[in-house]
Image 1: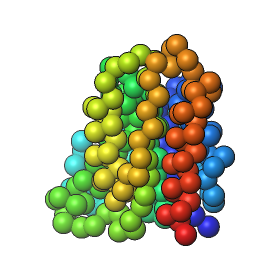
Image 2: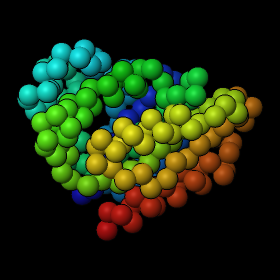
Image 3: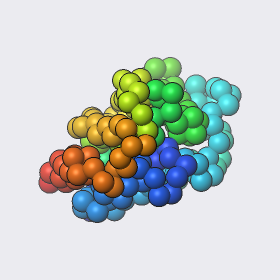
Length: 185
């Protein structure tokens, strides 16, 4: 059975980002695990440099389970509202813990995530602000997880028209789900 990890950076349980996540979940085959950055028991990286010499992370919290799931999953989705042209600060704080993979690759010269993955990016912006920084950050972080990004779905002007009323966005999210299912076969 294929497994998908969705990293959710939205604080809103019924907002536009969650609409995109729910739409994707309905399309995906297999098991789906969602990490809600605002509600997870995950602290940010404290730059203790433990991972410079050791696998894993010195901080023992909910991220340990996510590290394990990253190793075994087939797909990773990064989903976030866009705040000041970037993914949310809380999601960045959680994902700062990916420092352990960066340290493995560039300091310890190890392959931290040997299993190749596919994934995508879901971004929602209330205005028409640029998405390039949020998308670039997301791609860089997914790259650390050995994840090839198949598509980015960007919903802008959600303050005017919410995602649930945007057939173009909902269809794009469903198409991402179909692409991920095809990659699984």
